[in-house]
Amino acid sequence: MPFSISNDEILETIKMLQTEKLDIRTITMGINIQDCRDSDGTKTGRKIYEKIADYAKNLVKVGDEIEKLYGIPIINKRISVSPVSIVGNGLSSEDMVIIGQYLDKAAQEAGVNFIGGFTALVHKGYSNGDKELIAAIPETLAITERVCASVNVGTTKAGINMDAVYNMGTIIKETAELTGERNGLGCAKLVVFCNAVEDNPFMAGAFHGIGEAESIINIGISGPGVILNVVKKHPDASFGELASIIKNTAFKITRTGELVGRAASARLGVPFGIVDVSLAPTPAVGDSVAEILKSMGLEMVGAHGSTAALALLNDAVKKGGAMASSHVGGLSGAFIPVSEDAGMMESVIAGALNIDKLEAMTSVCSVGLDMIAIPGDTPASTISGIIADEAAIGMINRKTTAVRIIPAPGKKVGDWVEFGGLLGKAPVMAVSQFSSEAFIGRQGRIPAPIHALNN
Image 1 (cartoon, rainbow, N blue to C red):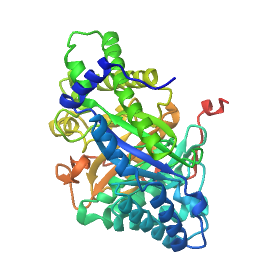
Image 2: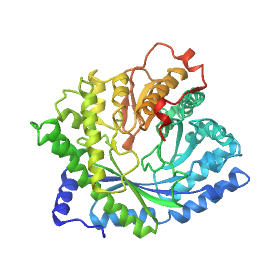
Image 3: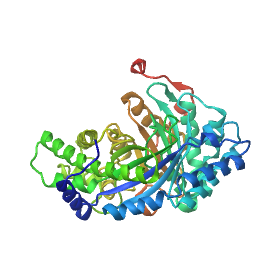
Image 4: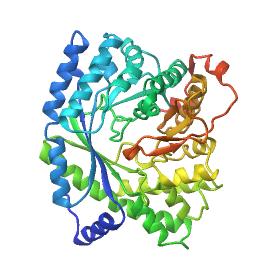
């Protein structure tokens, strides 16, 4: 049955675009680079560069054409590749850095702002390639502009690799120090996951999963402003009514994403993958998930009831997306980054929101602790403890969780860190002053929960 949109839907969508900041946040092309393996980093990197240059040569052009044709803003065009730790298994960390430079060059050539897939999947243990790639992360993120890295340290089925959690605390600190003149910006391109998904179009955690096709088009669509508008229009709605209203609105947003995804797929000759229906905020006024939660009746995000409000929002968005498309995937739900959401920043400044409340809210949101600046002198073991807590929430709740945290060199609680663009700015937040060092030092593996035995 051909995909179609009614005239009423078109008119409604025009309103969303003109007054409510609806946009396609990203068209992300996934590319399998497993066949690019060669004897060293330079040869492998060249093959990767050539394949990306071939597959993605028209990505930006097609995105621009669709944007003009439908009048739908497409904010980012991006690329994800197979986990480089797999492609480069057997190579050295120096070789991995060279591959990262070729990825950066390929992204620049294609005209995209980010490329994801400098990735290691170590939830049950390290391969040699994983070890070398993780060692290469700080330098790679320091010398490249567009490369994004991710490491998956746990799953519900496997448990949590605490050796990797221990290691990533140090890696994050090193990355911050190597990009200290830019307020630790390298850490904004590094995500530590539990239950990472293979079809996520959003950065910095996107990679092209090993179960995916040779190439794929995934769409990330965002509409916090649209949801905010409908919530504001129904101040007296009960929770059940509010959930239905949000669900119906998410349905309409998803239809727009599927339209763009199928158009891009046809023009690029690449299969359409999924629509990720995530409410991804920006620093712009009116484009905030926090404002949606406040419109439900909270004085500030962080007030008691914030986790329940976010749970309702996240679930309704997922249900609306699933109604609209058979190919909803990725993360889908609501992101709660601090630096990228003006309302979240406001709540932190007011003292309503701290890292502990954010952690509680991650049990029901799309991902986890996202774009949070902490003091530059925070010990690596404390960062590892934060990662361990977040991974435990994901493991036990069978959901994706993540940590994207920036120990800003030279900054203390109350200072501000500027990242620019969609990454915004963030107040430096306090972390616990009590040590996690002996706990993190145990290492080993936290066993999978009993429900991992479901099969």
